[in-house]
Structures are given as structure tokens and as C-alpha cells.
Length: 185
Image (cartoon, rainbow, N blue to C red; front, side, top):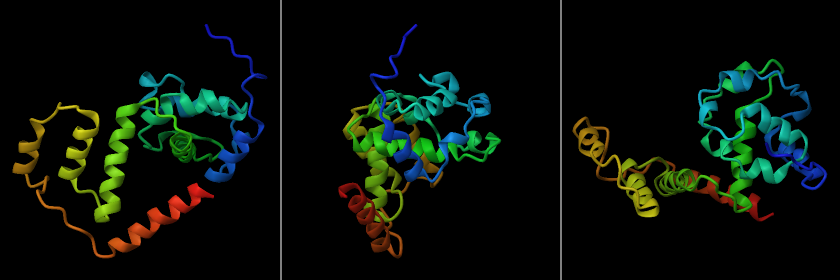
């Protein structure tokens, strides 16, 4: 059992920053555990959602931003729909992932590599170009599993060999630029 010295790792401003960025009132969480009970990925988390929320309330920045749970969250919003106080817990998990990225933490390297590949495709084409995303992910991760799914998916017309940009792709680029400006401030 790990004993934490909460005074050593306490960051008073962390919870406020997460509350501001997520638009959620973290103090409303009274640890009922409904979020954890409903989460389909609790079995894989190193910290259940309710403990992420508690550590967040206690200003445990390093514990929260380095935990694998925030990267494994599928954003299915089960936690959000089960919260009796209307806290958008999935939004908080998303904000924590963004903060973790900005501060250089990436405990789940392959998830970050996939997310980077996905976002590169959206930025370039305005939508996901599946084949390009797969190739970028394989190049980054050097992971060659599931290649047998490519031909099956292509045969069903679900995998296109040419990227098709959306109308208004420039607007998507502007969204990425505004996000980047927010990071630079």
C-alpha cells in the first residue's frame, strides 16, 4: 500500500485550473462512486474515476496527470450520465488528458501516438483519412498488429485509399490554430 504525503505533492491551483478549463464545479463530487461503478474500463484503470476525482480535489497534480486512467478513458460519458450532481466527468477526463499532453506526460505512449495520428489527419483533411491514420500510427508505434483487418475493411468499402478533404477544411485548420494559440498563452 502506497502512503501519500498530501502536503508534499499538493498544488493548490491545480483543481482551480481544471475547474476553469472544464467548466465543472469539482467540489460537487461527494464520492458516491456511481462514475466508477458504471465505467466499462474500470478494470483497466490504475486509478478508478472516483479516485481521480478525489485526487483532483486534493490538488494532487502529479498523481492525476501521470495516471493511466485519463488516457484509457473512452469518453463514453457513462460517468457523466450517472453523476447525481450533473458533473461532466468525461469532460474533466478530457481536460486532464490535454493538460497531461501540454506538460509532457504520456504514460500510455501508444494511445498518445494514435491520438496524434488521428488529429494530424483531421487537421490535414478536415476529417479522418483512415488509411493515412493507420499508416502514421504504424510508423510512430512500429506496431504491425491487426494488419489482416485492412483488406477485410477495404473489401467492405470502409477503407478508402485516397484522402477526401471536406468542404471548409480551412475552418478546421483555424480551430487547430486557435487551440495552439491557447496553449501558447
